[in-house]
Image (cartoon, rainbow, N blue to C red; front, side):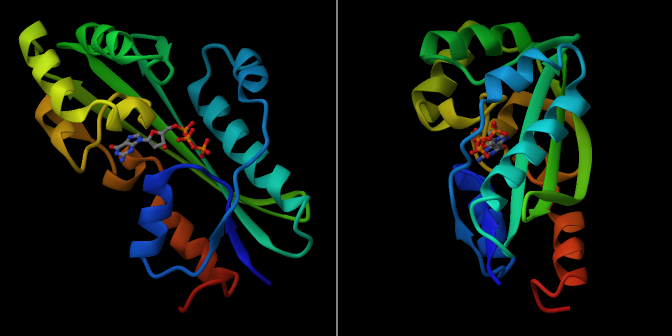
Length: 194
Ligand SMILES: Nc1nc2c(ncn2[C@H]2C[C@H](O)[C@@H](COP(=O)(O)OP(=O)(O)OP(=O)(O)O)O2)c(=O)[nH]1
């Protein structure tokens, strides 16, 4: 029996590796846009649906193996933001975020043989400080294209921390994976040492 991470996310892989979890990675084959279109305005449901869809899809291709799926969704004042298309889009996102509160929802799911066995959702609120256009360009000079893979246009473990006045919520949730509940679920299933 193998544990699989159904994700292309480098940070999700790194978090599991740093926790000493033995797993392998496989990219999920999920039509995220179709699922997103059916969950307008409901970030918690969308994050969970996407995490579950990724885990279930990969688990149907690997009989008996446990599969982890994850997803993060961000909204600012009720408007959902996807990953930036390019650097100019990233600058536009950050200018919009300036001085506002972002809600970041991260969901994680476990599946086996196409059946969803466990999930956890958590959210965080990140308060952006006022960002000047000059600061945004200097930030992107340092962080682009690395943050092009990050839904909030930041890496909290890097310069992203300079964007905020205050952050409320679990650090791992912000990175994209509610790690502590997941590790508990893995222990309960004998997928890592208790
Ligand atoms: N390194 C880092 N990445 C972050 C941070 N906040 C969010 N992210 C990343 C985690 C995810 O890779 C990405 C959110 O996009 P998704 O949840 O759609 O996952 P992604 O498409 O990257 O991979 P996946 O769908 O799981 O194959 O943003 C952060 O503070 N640091």
